[in-house]
Image (cartoon, rainbow, N blue to C red; front, side, top):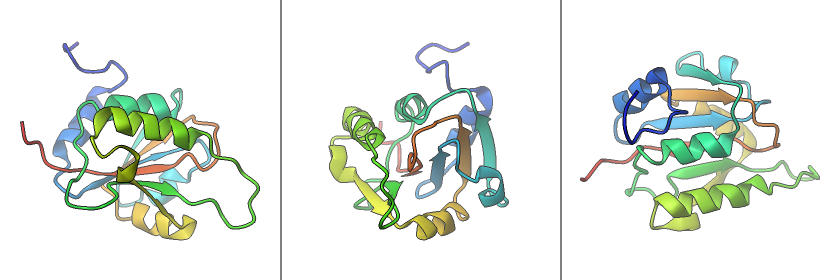
Amino acid sequence: MLKGIPKILSPELLMVLAEMGHSDRLVIGDGNFPAESMGKDAIVIRMDGHGVPEILDAILQVFPLDTYVEHPVSLMEVMPGDPVETPIWDTYKEIVKKHDERGEKAIGTIERFAFYEETKKSYAIIATGESALYANIMLQKGVVTD
């Protein structure tokens, strides 16, 4: 046990977050995300019993977002014509605002298949049990300045 570290962050995940360097990307996938097939060249960490918001909030307590790019946080765009609502995105905006002074301006979107291609280049993927649709999120690591 450590003081000041969210308990949801396992030793394995903390090691991966510490290993990541500036510009490396981390994907937190919802329960439908093909983490294992997308993560053939990445580290895949299973957190099936947890939702994306609680994981995102914990990670952003220790993980700096990249300040050299406009959108260090990327969401998977809803496919045109797909009648899906994405209220979880509002939750993400609140979480990002809590941890990054840019707030929701730090968040962008990536077309679904481009998101998959970018995921294949990510350092790590977290597979969750999140049931919300289009709840996938990609974070680009920045530098620690403190």
